[in-house]
Image (cartoon, rainbow, N blue to C red; front, side):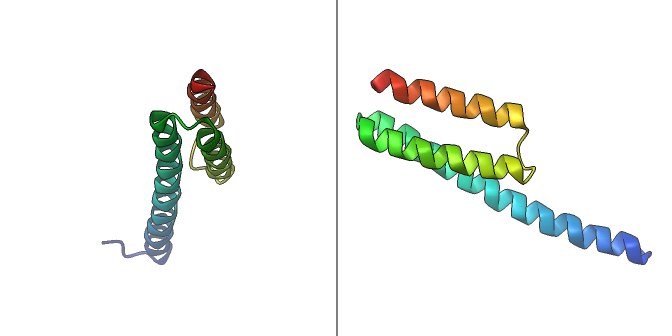
Length: 87
């Protein structure tokens, strides 16, 4: 256990950020699963709607520093490709 005050604070801050990042990642995973579920059902309109929401969620996570911008771009691109295939 840390003895120095600044080290104790860093432990608390890192734990708080870890929990926040975990919640954001979970939200992104849920949004992506909804897109793939809509694709599996063959519902193009629902898939496009879910894609818009998922892209927004991924962009928000990227702006908060949870994901790298290239990772987010690749993820959105692949989702777009999958939705366009069912067209």
